[in-house]
Image (tube, helix red, strand yellow):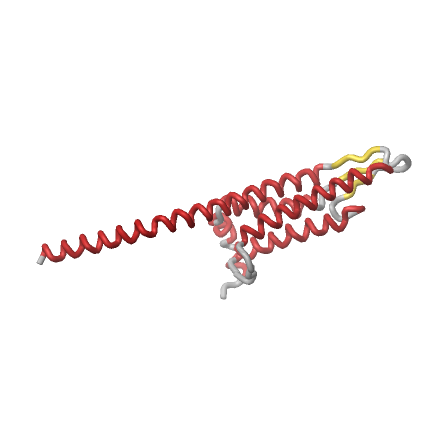
Length: 186
């Protein structure tokens, strides 16, 4: 078994070997994890100084934690792929997990946004900040990339199915041609 330092030397190579769509899904979830710590909303009360909240504060704490944990779980799946440890066994296709996780996060982000808008009544000024907006865009891009990955896999399966007969015919013709060559040489 290889040690961890020797495996990390091949992380760049393993990342390059991934399909473009998988890279996009991974980067979108990684950026979502990072942007959960950025400001999602800023409040300016009537009296006192203004303050910011990220995904882990205020009325949207539960939704923010769920968004963070879902993206972190997807990042762990990719870490397993990059390190090639194969310790995570998925009961369904990973493309479906990526699509389901992305759609669930989009719903949670929209719900968090609506809760933030509803709670803005008691403040002089409440503004949505870049953290929640970028998280929403990242998840939309991630779902589209996962969908394209699924479509590519389905297209490849269909092409392989219809080319099986073609490959059999080519193999039989090749065998027949080799037999006729062998008999003419004798």
